[in-house]
Image (cartoon, rainbow, N blue to C red; front, side):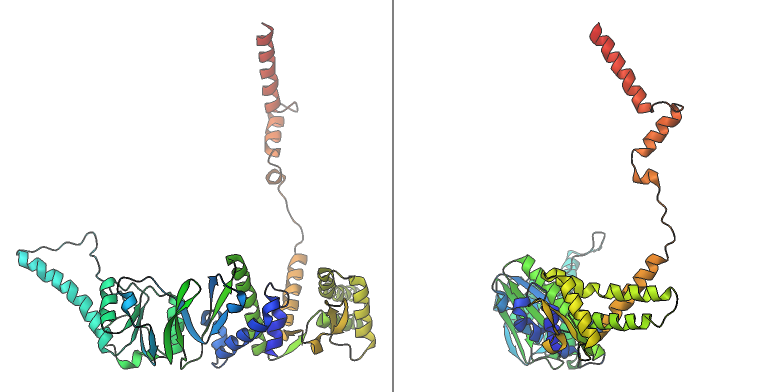
Length: 418
Protein backbone atom coordinates (compact mmCIF):
# COMPACT_ATOMS: atom_id res chain seq x y z
CA UNK A 1 0.00 0.00 0.00
CA UNK A 2 2.74 2.46 0.95
CA UNK A 3 4.62 1.80 -2.28
CA UNK A 4 1.52 2.57 -4.33
CA UNK A 5 0.77 5.79 -2.45
CA UNK A 6 4.39 6.90 -2.85
CA UNK A 7 4.26 6.11 -6.57
CA UNK A 8 0.98 7.99 -6.95
CA UNK A 9 2.54 11.08 -5.37
CA UNK A 10 5.49 10.86 -7.81
CA UNK A 11 3.37 10.25 -10.93
CA UNK A 12 2.99 13.90 -11.84
CA UNK A 13 6.51 14.92 -10.85
CA UNK A 14 9.71 15.42 -12.81
CA UNK A 15 11.13 12.12 -11.52
CA UNK A 16 8.00 10.09 -12.39
CA UNK A 17 10.02 7.87 -14.72
CA UNK A 18 12.31 6.94 -11.80
CA UNK A 19 9.61 6.09 -9.27
CA UNK A 20 10.80 2.48 -9.20
CA UNK A 21 13.99 3.81 -7.57
CA UNK A 22 12.62 6.55 -5.31
CA UNK A 23 9.35 4.98 -4.09
CA UNK A 24 11.09 2.11 -2.16
CA UNK A 25 13.64 4.60 -0.79
CA UNK A 26 10.86 6.86 0.50
CA UNK A 27 8.93 4.00 2.08
CA UNK A 28 12.05 2.60 3.78
CA UNK A 29 12.92 6.04 5.14
CA UNK A 30 9.47 6.66 6.61
CA UNK A 31 9.10 3.16 8.01
CA UNK A 32 12.38 3.54 9.88
CA UNK A 33 10.80 6.43 11.79
CA UNK A 34 7.50 4.67 12.45
CA UNK A 35 9.24 2.29 14.87
CA UNK A 36 9.10 5.06 17.49
CA UNK A 37 5.81 6.32 18.91
CA UNK A 38 6.36 9.97 17.96
CA UNK A 39 8.92 9.32 15.25
CA UNK A 40 6.73 10.55 12.39
CA UNK A 41 6.14 13.93 14.03
CA UNK A 42 9.72 15.02 13.34
CA UNK A 43 9.98 13.52 9.86
CA UNK A 44 11.70 16.55 8.28
CA UNK A 45 14.30 16.61 11.05
CA UNK A 46 15.10 12.91 11.01
CA UNK A 47 15.21 12.35 7.22
CA UNK A 48 17.98 14.39 5.62
CA UNK A 49 18.20 15.05 1.89
CA UNK A 50 21.68 15.88 0.58
CA UNK A 51 22.05 17.25 -2.95
CA UNK A 52 25.14 16.57 -5.08
CA UNK A 53 25.10 18.00 -8.61
CA UNK A 54 26.58 15.82 -11.32
CA UNK A 55 26.16 12.20 -12.27
CA UNK A 56 23.02 10.32 -13.17
CA UNK A 57 19.81 10.49 -11.19
CA UNK A 58 19.89 6.68 -10.93
CA UNK A 59 23.04 7.06 -8.80
CA UNK A 60 20.93 8.44 -5.94
CA UNK A 61 20.89 6.18 -2.90
CA UNK A 62 19.58 5.87 0.65
CA UNK A 63 21.83 5.68 3.70
CA UNK A 64 20.17 3.91 6.63
CA UNK A 65 21.94 6.05 9.13
CA UNK A 66 23.56 9.48 8.92
CA UNK A 67 25.59 11.03 6.13
CA UNK A 68 26.91 14.57 5.98
CA UNK A 69 29.39 16.45 3.86
CA UNK A 70 33.00 16.68 5.02
CA UNK A 71 33.43 19.85 7.03
CA UNK A 72 36.23 22.41 6.89
CA UNK A 73 39.49 20.82 7.99
CA UNK A 74 43.01 21.86 8.86
CA UNK A 75 46.42 20.34 8.16
CA UNK A 76 46.67 16.84 9.58
CA UNK A 77 43.19 15.83 8.49
CA UNK A 78 44.48 13.51 5.76
CA UNK A 79 46.51 11.60 8.35
CA UNK A 80 43.39 10.59 10.24
CA UNK A 81 41.83 7.14 10.17
CA UNK A 82 38.82 7.30 7.85
CA UNK A 83 37.31 3.89 8.51
CA UNK A 84 36.14 2.38 11.82
CA UNK A 85 34.22 -0.70 12.89
CA UNK A 86 32.09 -0.38 16.03
CA UNK A 87 33.58 2.99 16.96
CA UNK A 88 32.79 5.08 20.03
CA UNK A 89 31.32 8.45 19.03
CA UNK A 90 31.70 11.60 21.12
CA UNK A 91 29.50 14.60 20.30
CA UNK A 92 30.48 18.03 21.60
CA UNK A 93 29.28 21.59 21.59
CA UNK A 94 32.74 22.77 22.61
CA UNK A 95 35.37 24.79 20.79
CA UNK A 96 38.61 22.80 20.50
CA UNK A 97 41.08 25.50 19.51
CA UNK A 98 43.12 28.23 21.09
CA UNK A 99 40.82 31.16 21.76
CA UNK A 100 41.96 34.72 21.34
CA UNK A 101 41.20 37.03 24.20
CA UNK A 102 38.63 39.74 23.68
CA UNK A 103 39.76 43.13 22.46
CA UNK A 104 39.35 44.80 25.83
CA UNK A 105 41.14 42.05 27.78
CA UNK A 106 43.92 43.35 30.02
CA UNK A 107 46.48 41.39 32.01
CA UNK A 108 48.92 43.18 34.31
CA UNK A 109 52.18 41.48 35.19
CA UNK A 110 55.10 42.55 37.36
CA UNK A 111 57.66 40.06 36.10
CA UNK A 112 58.36 39.05 32.45
CA UNK A 113 58.35 35.41 33.53
CA UNK A 114 54.70 35.74 34.46
CA UNK A 115 53.83 36.28 30.79
CA UNK A 116 55.14 32.84 29.89
CA UNK A 117 53.09 31.31 32.69
CA UNK A 118 49.93 32.89 31.19
CA UNK A 119 50.76 31.47 27.74
CA UNK A 120 51.44 28.06 29.26
CA UNK A 121 48.10 28.18 31.06
CA UNK A 122 46.28 28.86 27.80
CA UNK A 123 47.96 25.88 26.16
CA UNK A 124 47.24 23.72 29.19
CA UNK A 125 43.52 24.49 28.93
CA UNK A 126 43.28 23.21 25.34
CA UNK A 127 45.46 20.17 26.12
CA UNK A 128 43.24 19.26 29.07
CA UNK A 129 40.22 19.30 26.76
CA UNK A 130 41.96 17.11 24.18
CA UNK A 131 43.19 14.66 26.81
CA UNK A 132 39.66 14.34 28.18
CA UNK A 133 38.35 13.44 24.70
CA UNK A 134 41.02 10.78 24.21
CA UNK A 135 40.85 9.29 27.71
CA UNK A 136 37.09 8.68 27.53
CA UNK A 137 37.73 6.05 24.85
CA UNK A 138 36.18 7.85 21.87
CA UNK A 139 37.30 7.00 18.33
CA UNK A 140 35.28 9.75 16.58
CA UNK A 141 34.92 13.30 17.89
CA UNK A 142 32.34 15.60 16.30
CA UNK A 143 31.76 19.17 17.42
CA UNK A 144 29.28 21.84 16.45
CA UNK A 145 31.99 24.47 17.08
CA UNK A 146 35.41 24.75 15.36
CA UNK A 147 38.13 22.13 15.86
CA UNK A 148 41.49 23.85 15.32
CA UNK A 149 44.67 22.68 13.64
CA UNK A 150 46.28 21.75 16.99
CA UNK A 151 43.36 19.47 17.91
CA UNK A 152 43.25 17.98 14.39
CA UNK A 153 46.91 16.97 14.52
CA UNK A 154 46.58 15.82 18.14
CA UNK A 155 43.72 13.44 17.29
CA UNK A 156 45.41 12.26 14.08
CA UNK A 157 48.54 11.26 16.01
CA UNK A 158 46.41 9.13 18.33
CA UNK A 159 44.33 7.42 15.62
CA UNK A 160 41.11 9.36 16.16
CA UNK A 161 38.82 11.03 13.65
CA UNK A 162 37.46 14.52 14.30
CA UNK A 163 35.28 17.05 12.52
CA UNK A 164 34.30 20.56 13.55
CA UNK A 165 31.60 22.98 12.44
CA UNK A 166 29.14 20.09 12.00
CA UNK A 167 25.65 21.44 11.26
CA UNK A 168 23.20 21.34 14.12
CA UNK A 169 20.73 19.11 12.25
CA UNK A 170 23.42 16.58 11.32
CA UNK A 171 24.73 16.49 14.89
CA UNK A 172 21.25 15.81 16.27
CA UNK A 173 20.71 13.03 13.73
CA UNK A 174 24.01 11.41 14.72
CA UNK A 175 22.96 11.62 18.38
CA UNK A 176 19.59 10.04 17.59
CA UNK A 177 21.09 7.23 15.53
CA UNK A 178 24.12 6.34 17.65
CA UNK A 179 22.63 6.97 21.08
CA UNK A 180 25.27 9.55 21.99
CA UNK A 181 24.60 12.59 24.18
CA UNK A 182 25.82 16.01 23.08
CA UNK A 183 28.21 17.42 25.69
CA UNK A 184 28.69 21.12 26.42
CA UNK A 185 31.88 20.54 28.41
CA UNK A 186 34.79 18.14 28.36
CA UNK A 187 34.77 17.77 32.14
CA UNK A 188 33.51 14.50 33.52
CA UNK A 189 33.01 12.68 30.21
CA UNK A 190 32.27 8.98 30.78
CA UNK A 191 31.52 6.03 28.53
CA UNK A 192 27.77 6.33 29.03
CA UNK A 193 27.56 9.52 26.94
CA UNK A 194 29.28 7.91 23.95
CA UNK A 195 27.41 6.51 20.99
CA UNK A 196 28.27 3.73 18.60
CA UNK A 197 27.51 2.32 15.17
CA UNK A 198 28.52 -0.71 13.14
CA UNK A 199 30.60 1.13 10.54
CA UNK A 200 31.98 4.60 9.91
CA UNK A 201 33.68 5.61 6.69
CA UNK A 202 34.51 8.63 4.60
CA UNK A 203 33.24 8.06 1.08
CA UNK A 204 33.68 9.96 -2.17
CA UNK A 205 30.31 10.82 -3.76
CA UNK A 206 30.70 12.78 -6.96
CA UNK A 207 32.95 15.75 -6.25
CA UNK A 208 32.19 15.69 -2.52
CA UNK A 209 33.40 13.60 0.39
CA UNK A 210 30.82 12.34 2.85
CA UNK A 211 31.07 10.94 6.37
CA UNK A 212 28.75 7.93 6.69
CA UNK A 213 27.48 6.32 9.90
CA UNK A 214 25.75 3.01 9.10
CA UNK A 215 24.49 0.07 11.12
CA UNK A 216 23.32 2.34 13.93
CA UNK A 217 21.60 0.69 16.93
CA UNK A 218 18.70 3.16 16.73
CA UNK A 219 17.45 3.05 13.13
CA UNK A 220 15.47 6.25 13.55
CA UNK A 221 17.13 8.43 10.96
CA UNK A 222 18.05 8.11 7.30
CA UNK A 223 19.76 10.21 4.66
CA UNK A 224 18.93 10.45 0.96
CA UNK A 225 21.76 11.34 -1.41
CA UNK A 226 20.34 12.91 -4.57
CA UNK A 227 22.30 13.06 -7.82
CA UNK A 228 21.43 14.85 -11.03
CA UNK A 229 22.79 16.77 -13.97
CA UNK A 230 21.93 20.25 -12.70
CA UNK A 231 21.09 22.02 -9.47
CA UNK A 232 17.63 22.93 -10.78
CA UNK A 233 16.81 19.27 -11.48
CA UNK A 234 18.02 18.21 -8.03
CA UNK A 235 16.04 20.99 -6.35
CA UNK A 236 12.87 19.88 -8.14
CA UNK A 237 13.62 16.26 -7.21
CA UNK A 238 13.93 17.27 -3.56
CA UNK A 239 10.52 18.97 -3.63
CA UNK A 240 8.96 15.91 -5.28
CA UNK A 241 10.46 13.56 -2.71
CA UNK A 242 9.29 15.81 0.12
CA UNK A 243 5.71 15.63 -1.19
CA UNK A 244 5.89 11.86 -1.42
CA UNK A 245 7.36 11.61 2.10
CA UNK A 246 4.44 13.59 3.49
CA UNK A 247 1.93 11.37 1.66
CA UNK A 248 3.49 8.17 3.00
CA UNK A 249 3.64 9.66 6.49
CA UNK A 250 -0.04 10.57 6.31
CA UNK A 251 -0.90 7.06 5.04
CA UNK A 252 0.84 5.48 8.02
CA UNK A 253 -1.00 7.74 10.42
CA UNK A 254 -4.45 7.44 8.89
CA UNK A 255 -4.14 3.73 8.06
CA UNK A 256 -6.72 4.20 5.28
CA UNK A 257 -6.57 5.13 1.60
CA UNK A 258 -9.06 6.11 -1.09
CA UNK A 259 -8.86 5.91 -4.86
CA UNK A 260 -7.45 8.90 -6.71
CA UNK A 261 -8.07 10.14 -10.23
CA UNK A 262 -11.18 12.06 -9.17
CA UNK A 263 -13.02 8.89 -8.11
CA UNK A 264 -13.73 9.92 -4.53
CA UNK A 265 -14.85 13.40 -5.63
CA UNK A 266 -17.35 11.95 -8.10
CA UNK A 267 -18.72 9.54 -5.50
CA UNK A 268 -19.15 12.30 -2.89
CA UNK A 269 -20.78 14.53 -5.52
CA UNK A 270 -23.26 11.73 -6.31
CA UNK A 271 -24.29 11.39 -2.67
CA UNK A 272 -24.62 15.16 -2.28
CA UNK A 273 -26.90 15.39 -5.31
CA UNK A 274 -29.06 12.61 -3.91
CA UNK A 275 -29.16 14.31 -0.52
CA UNK A 276 -30.06 17.66 -2.10
CA UNK A 277 -33.35 16.17 -3.32
CA UNK A 278 -34.43 15.71 0.30
CA UNK A 279 -33.87 19.37 1.19
CA UNK A 280 -36.58 21.99 0.82
CA UNK A 281 -35.84 25.59 0.03
CA UNK A 282 -32.63 27.32 -1.04
CA UNK A 283 -30.45 24.88 0.87
CA UNK A 284 -30.87 22.50 -2.05
CA UNK A 285 -29.04 24.99 -4.30
CA UNK A 286 -26.13 25.20 -1.86
CA UNK A 287 -25.66 21.43 -1.69
CA UNK A 288 -25.90 21.11 -5.49
CA UNK A 289 -23.31 23.87 -5.92
CA UNK A 290 -20.97 22.04 -3.54
CA UNK A 291 -21.43 18.82 -5.53
CA UNK A 292 -20.73 20.65 -8.79
CA UNK A 293 -17.55 22.15 -7.32
CA UNK A 294 -16.23 18.68 -6.50
CA UNK A 295 -16.46 17.70 -10.16
CA UNK A 296 -13.80 20.32 -10.95
CA UNK A 297 -11.09 17.88 -9.79
CA UNK A 298 -11.70 15.17 -12.46
CA UNK A 299 -12.48 17.88 -15.01
CA UNK A 300 -9.09 19.50 -14.41
CA UNK A 301 -7.36 16.13 -14.67
CA UNK A 302 -8.93 15.65 -18.10
CA UNK A 303 -7.93 19.13 -19.24
CA UNK A 304 -4.36 18.66 -18.05
CA UNK A 305 -4.11 15.36 -19.92
CA UNK A 306 -5.52 16.93 -23.10
CA UNK A 307 -8.79 14.97 -23.22
CA UNK A 308 -12.40 16.10 -23.66
CA UNK A 309 -13.58 16.62 -20.08
CA UNK A 310 -17.28 16.67 -21.00
CA UNK A 311 -17.29 13.14 -22.43
CA UNK A 312 -15.27 11.67 -19.58
CA UNK A 313 -17.35 13.40 -16.89
CA UNK A 314 -20.53 12.14 -18.49
CA UNK A 315 -19.17 8.59 -18.41
CA UNK A 316 -18.13 9.01 -14.77
CA UNK A 317 -21.56 10.32 -13.71
CA UNK A 318 -23.28 7.41 -15.45
CA UNK A 319 -20.88 4.86 -13.94
CA UNK A 320 -21.19 6.17 -10.39
CA UNK A 321 -24.98 6.49 -10.63
CA UNK A 322 -25.98 3.28 -12.40
CA UNK A 323 -23.27 0.79 -11.44
CA UNK A 324 -23.05 -0.43 -7.83
CA UNK A 325 -19.41 -1.38 -8.42
CA UNK A 326 -18.49 2.01 -9.89
CA UNK A 327 -17.54 3.62 -6.59
CA UNK A 328 -13.80 3.82 -7.36
CA UNK A 329 -14.00 4.75 -11.03
CA UNK A 330 -11.91 7.79 -11.96
CA UNK A 331 -10.07 9.34 -14.89
CA UNK A 332 -7.72 7.18 -16.96
CA UNK A 333 -5.26 9.82 -18.14
CA UNK A 334 -3.27 7.32 -20.20
CA UNK A 335 -6.11 6.17 -22.45
CA UNK A 336 -8.53 9.06 -22.20
CA UNK A 337 -11.24 6.96 -20.61
CA UNK A 338 -12.45 5.89 -17.15
CA UNK A 339 -11.15 3.03 -15.02
CA UNK A 340 -11.19 1.57 -11.51
CA UNK A 341 -8.37 3.62 -10.04
CA UNK A 342 -8.38 1.61 -6.80
CA UNK A 343 -7.54 -1.58 -8.70
CA UNK A 344 -4.97 0.35 -10.76
CA UNK A 345 -3.17 1.39 -7.55
CA UNK A 346 -3.86 5.13 -7.76
CA UNK A 347 -4.26 5.67 -4.02
CA UNK A 348 -4.29 8.67 -1.73
CA UNK A 349 -4.49 8.90 2.10
CA UNK A 350 -8.05 9.43 3.28
CA UNK A 351 -6.89 12.10 5.75
CA UNK A 352 -5.56 14.18 2.88
CA UNK A 353 -8.95 14.18 1.17
CA UNK A 354 -10.75 15.04 4.40
CA UNK A 355 -8.41 17.95 5.08
CA UNK A 356 -8.76 19.19 1.50
CA UNK A 357 -12.55 19.28 1.72
CA UNK A 358 -12.47 20.97 5.13
CA UNK A 359 -9.94 23.59 4.02
CA UNK A 360 -11.86 24.37 0.81
CA UNK A 361 -15.12 24.76 2.72
CA UNK A 362 -13.53 27.08 5.27
CA UNK A 363 -11.99 29.21 2.53
CA UNK A 364 -15.33 29.54 0.75
CA UNK A 365 -17.06 30.53 4.02
CA UNK A 366 -14.43 33.20 4.69
CA UNK A 367 -14.92 34.69 1.21
CA UNK A 368 -18.73 34.66 1.57
CA UNK A 369 -18.48 36.40 4.94
CA UNK A 370 -17.02 39.51 3.26
CA UNK A 371 -19.95 41.93 2.90
CA UNK A 372 -18.26 44.68 0.95
CA UNK A 373 -14.84 45.61 -0.34
CA UNK A 374 -13.88 49.27 0.14
CA UNK A 375 -11.45 50.69 -2.40
CA UNK A 376 -9.75 54.06 -2.05
CA UNK A 377 -9.71 55.58 -5.57
CA UNK A 378 -6.78 57.81 -4.71
CA UNK A 379 -4.63 54.77 -3.87
CA UNK A 380 -5.69 53.01 -7.09
CA UNK A 381 -5.07 55.98 -9.44
CA UNK A 382 -1.72 57.71 -8.83
CA UNK A 383 -2.78 60.71 -10.94
CA UNK A 384 -6.09 61.23 -9.13
CA UNK A 385 -4.55 63.17 -6.27
CA UNK A 386 -2.83 65.67 -8.58
CA UNK A 387 -6.00 66.17 -10.63
CA UNK A 388 -8.11 66.83 -7.54
CA UNK A 389 -5.55 69.31 -6.22
CA UNK A 390 -5.44 71.16 -9.53
CA UNK A 391 -9.24 71.32 -9.77
CA UNK A 392 -9.51 72.80 -6.26
CA UNK A 393 -6.94 75.48 -6.91
CA UNK A 394 -8.43 76.59 -10.20
CA UNK A 395 -12.07 76.75 -9.05
CA UNK A 396 -13.27 74.26 -11.63
CA UNK A 397 -10.89 75.41 -14.39
CA UNK A 398 -7.88 73.51 -15.72
CA UNK A 399 -5.51 71.95 -13.26
CA UNK A 400 -2.45 73.71 -11.91
CA UNK A 401 -0.08 71.68 -14.07
CA UNK A 402 -1.97 72.63 -17.27
CA UNK A 403 -1.94 76.34 -16.31
CA UNK A 404 1.82 76.32 -15.76
CA UNK A 405 2.41 74.53 -19.04
CA UNK A 406 0.32 77.12 -20.94
CA UNK A 407 2.25 79.98 -19.38
CA UNK A 408 5.59 78.45 -20.32
CA UNK A 409 4.43 77.95 -23.90
CA UNK A 410 3.42 81.66 -24.15
CA UNK A 411 6.80 82.80 -22.85
CA UNK A 412 8.67 80.61 -25.32
CA UNK A 413 6.53 81.91 -28.20
CA UNK A 414 7.33 85.55 -27.33
CA UNK A 415 11.03 84.81 -27.20
CA UNK A 416 10.89 83.07 -30.52
CA UNK A 417 8.99 86.00 -32.08
CA UNK A 418 11.52 88.56 -30.89
